[in-house]
Amino acid sequence: MTVRVRMAPSPTGNLHVGTARAALFNWLYARHEGGTYIVRIDDTDQERSTKEFEDEILSSFRWLGLDWDEGVEVGGPHGTYRQSDRLDRYRQVAEQLVASGAAYHDVRSTEELESLRARAQQEGKHPGHYIRRPDSVANEPSDEGAIRLSVPQDRPVVFQDLIRGEVSFEPRDVDDFVILRSNGTPTYHLASTVDDVDYAITHVARGEDLLPSTPKHILLTRSLGATEPTYAHLPLLFGTDGKKLSKRHGATALSDYRAMGYLPEAVFNYLAILGWSPDGETTIFTREEAIQAFDLEEVSRNPAAFDPAKLEWMNGEYIRAMDRGQFVDSVKPFVEEAVGRSLEENEWERFEELAGLIQERTKLLPEAGRQAVFLYADIDEYDEESWAKVMTKSGVGDVLDMGIAKLSSLPLWDAASIESVLREIPEELDIGAGKTFQPLRVAVTGSSVSPPLFESMAALGREPTMARLKRAREELG
RNA sequence: GGUCCCGUCGUCCAGGGGUCUAGGACGCCGGCCUUUCAAGCCGGAAACGCCGGUUCGAAUCCGGUCGGGACUGCCA
Image (cartoon, rainbow, N blue to C red; front, side):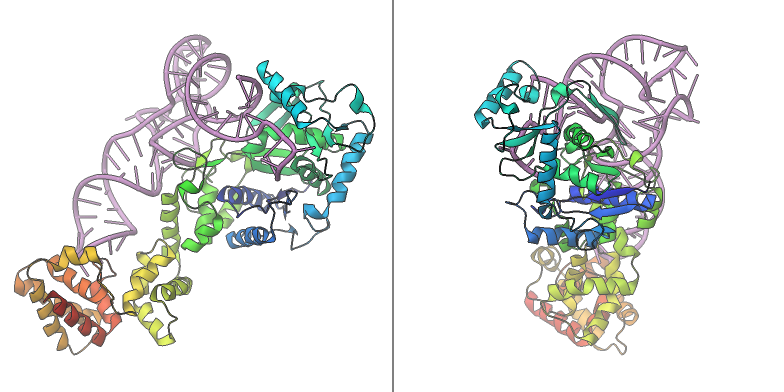
């Protein structure tokens, strides 16, 4: 039997990194097994679901490179792959289960149910312990109320989780849960398992938060006359403080990382490493290598902390691994954004002169923009800290004067020539290299942190460099 | 409270009875390189939650304990 796995996001928010990782594992498994990866939209929560979120989620999937073989937007043999289009199907299934005796209408009020739960809790039992088919009135056929699945109390629900091994639930700890609301709409449990059955899903890899729901889904599947899929419950993602990953830890939406200048390959790699590794030694690997080595059974059982620092390091690795042209292309929008206007073709030549040096120093795409602005925009104001640290020292004026003098008579304006005359300064003045090059750097780039000085001057050009040196000299007074 | 899941460096991932004085990666600390910042290189600190048991031998198996987490809704 060929493997069929699915990802079923709810379009009630942006794609969360945790969901993205679950999608990634499903995708890897499908690709490794040569199976089918399906994307379906779980929008039974019609209040909170929006088209915008759906679009955002799908575009994030595509950005990450998680293409799907079947499902929403790409089609397939199972309709639109959108739950809101299948409401009749769910309703029909629910009624059929009532007819077969597996489910029943429940007209009890919220208060009644609450008191049943309270009683169970007081007695130290599972809260759902007393949520059962009432043995009197409610057995009558009815159109009223919600529909609950009647959980058979005769034996435990046992299953083999691919990641956790055997997991078992006593039936008394599984309440008769609602499958169809009194307004006729399906709950997640119903819609999701009906879809899994109808779409012939063979493996369900999902967050561990759904582990307690699994006996419900198994029971439902069986009462539909089907065999449940193989489950694999993925460990959850946390922040570095061990708490649930939330806004407090920074960005949680995948699209935020895209906007911050992360590369999809790096995010892919990092997400994959959270809970899995090909061999315990390798941390950087390609999609192909991941597909080759991936197995759900080798996914860790422990929750993983999402560590932004490691992601950033990894992104730097990927940026440095790009070829020059690729780097320049990816970084162009960020440079223009930093400069505040679009750049002409000839202006890019100056950037390309420095591109290699900038690339080495870039972990996040926008950082490249910050390093390159000095090439295109005059210095509005010098970086305050840099000025205070280097320009207020004694002897800075002399350095600038000498720099101006030596550079103005330079016949050839290239990095090597610039270096050779500038190197004379510390010798003649008998001061350290840092003392001479740092002031020049601040004068020319506006900051004590920049790409290497001689190359920067060369790329900037003679006129602007001289102008900036003179201006800094004047600012010194 | 109840049910279920989990417990190796600060973090991620290895190790699943002897080769573990526990390995790799990020981060951290120190050094080298150096005009700054990175990168790179070298070195360092850093973990088997605890208690019992099984065994010649346990990070590895079993039990308990403690701790963390998820769920506990006519949300998903």
